[in-house]
Length: 306
Image (cartoon, one colour):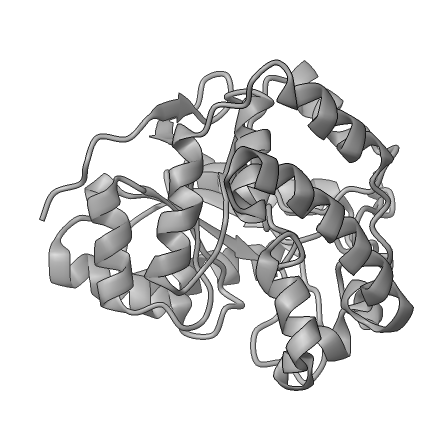
């Protein structure tokens, strides 16, 4: 088994080369899917310790294939696994503990990229960063980053570009919002068995109805191009610069192939203004996280005592 040659970009100014698109890994991926992704040339894999047994599955895949050296592996920490409610711990001690547990489950010696899921406002960010820096200096991890969902006006993109940092675009399809399945699933009543429609405000009630109209407009742009809404969303992100690396997550080979095909889509000069106008005017209704996590999108921490 050997990986195809896929486009590579630098992960940040001095970062390693990774595949132009990554793979977001969730709960139910199996070896056959990972084999398929690897053979297609996707060697940037993104996981998290909170995703049930995902890290353990990846570790088993490494042992089975011997391909650890071919994969740029990112994982996340911060949400406390197996807690009864959403619990966030970013303390110095917990960072070290979480990293050690990820290494154990993955059965590897070092992590390529470790993200903080979101800052805990009660823990100074300096304390969290101190632990990460020590782990980096001990070669336990190569790089670290912040996983967050910025709101309009936070200027995350501008800040990252000023600092020559890469932007890993997680959930580029809006947790499925920018897919045909969002419209079709709502129309067919599938939302009754989909947890998103019970927990995430932008999939609920009036927000859902407003967003259906918005996605229908986006679908019109995709139809003109003869591609899917998912492909248009990913192709648009890729068009914004090599410093943006989308990592669409899926557990189905069919959708993996659909997403991966976006690498070959060229957006012409006449299409870009139409898409830009839509993007600038688009106002998605509702936040992308459960109400219990309202306010976790982008926030400051308390100052560290001197």
